[in-house]
Length: 186
Image (cartoon, rainbow, N blue to C red):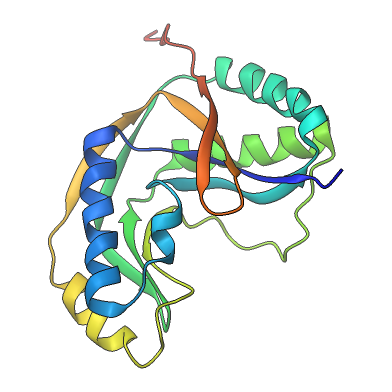
């Protein structure tokens, strides 16, 4: 049996996902870049990995335990940025709590599940993708001119992480793992 493809992410609240979907639809209509529409708006914590469906409960239990040991944190979306010449995204303001969450998650996935990325390790740069792989290099300057002129700032509280699974066409939310809601205010 062939393994499925999963990734782990933070999904903004529904209203923000709707706004970001509108940006993605604009990129599709005006810049012929619609591939980002295959997933809900998200901040990737662990990039796509293969795992056998029969053993996904191991991943789910690990994520449940991990999330239960963390408290909600705040995220600020701060305008648009790019990885030229192909990627345009909503930038996430630098945040030590988010960086620590991602580092902890990577460590747990490695130590508990033996999950090691088969891709070269890149520094964590949290963002929400608007246009990528199918954005043609020749069109990038025009698309970047448009998105870089938009003032877009939102903030939200992260109360869970999500496991997404690729169904062969799009990414679907498989399961969500809530953080510990009893915040420590001491």
